[in-house]
Structures are given as C-alpha cells and as structure tokens.
Image (cartoon, rainbow, N blue to C red):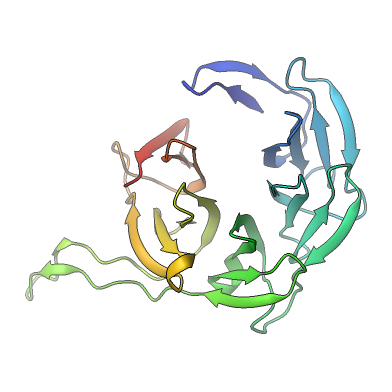
Length: 247
C-alpha cells in the first residue's frame, strides 16, 4: 500500500499485505486495509506502518471496499458474500446490509459503498445498478441507467459530435462530491457518471472515456472525489492516475 500526500508525492508504504483491496482512513487517522488473502481487515499506524488491530475474521470473505460514516462506523463491502458488513468504531460487528439473490432488494457481487444524506449507496455490479438502503439496512430503491443518445450524429456514419453514454455494464466504484452528487465509475464504459440523489437520482453528466491519452481511461478501478471536487481515478492498465476537475 503506497501513501501519497495531497500533492501526490509518495510519503510511505505498508508492506506484508495479502491481496489488499479496500482501503480507508478512520477518524483517528488509522489506515484500514481489507486483505482478500487473509479474509479480514487490518488496521495500521500511518506513522510507522505497525499493525494495530485485526477484525472481521470469520465475517468477511472478500473485503473489496471500506467506507466510514460520520459516527465512525465501518462499512466493509464483501463481494463474495453479497453483502455489506458493518462494524462500529471499536471494530465490533453491528449489522449486515443486503443479501444475495435476484430480487429488487438483493445484491450480486457488490463492489463499493458511499453514504449521502443518511442513505447507503451500494455498487451492485452483478445487478447492473446501484442499490440504496437506509441506515437500518432496509432497501429503498434501485438506481439504473439505460444510457443516453448521442448529439449531432451523422445519419450515415453514426458518428456523433457528443457521443452517448452506454448503460451500466460493470459498476465498479462510488464516490460523492461537495454537492452531494453520486459519482459512479463503470469499468467497461471507462467513464464516471454523475447522478443527483436530491433530484430523483437524475443523470447529470459524465467524464472520462476509453483510451490511453490524458483524460482517458482503460479498465478504471476506483474513483475518489476530494474535498476540492477534484476526482482521482485509477486507470487499471498500468501506473496511471487521472485527475478531473468536477463542474
């Protein structure tokens, strides 16, 4: 695990992990890492990289993402068990959110969690949607996306000045911006789509496109919108991180 400052200058690293997936920083500044190879979450001191605690043994199988709420509760997205396991700030389990299946209120290989306005948004990759729950784990609704049509398209070639967005194909990661909007990273579409939960989850805009050039993505794996509304997107095709200024 590599640690960078706000200027993307390398500050340190944590070694000895086993297939690390989810990463988060808690209210005490401790680094939480989901280890897929050890089926747990490990807590590290950022100052020296020392292991401080381990939790989730026997409860999580694939800790793909880790998210914290304002009370310090920890949401571990468990892709293999089709649920989100919730722990308190002392690492005690308090509830699970979601269940496997094919219904409106189920999850299929969830990938990430984001919390906006007292609601829990889950990237439901196998269901091609984002599932929304309340803090008690009750399902509220699904966010689906059928895509958008291109604009100013040539009737003969089909080429559009502004290409349309494809529908959800592989929802990979979620983040929120300062306006409370939800950013949804789609791995196959190589783009991030913005939705507004305050406006019936309406589609707002998107950024990123498939390619190797600046501002383009290939197999993007994660998105994080910083407090400055700068979106950091990891492009999974190599050692590349793309930065986008969000409007």
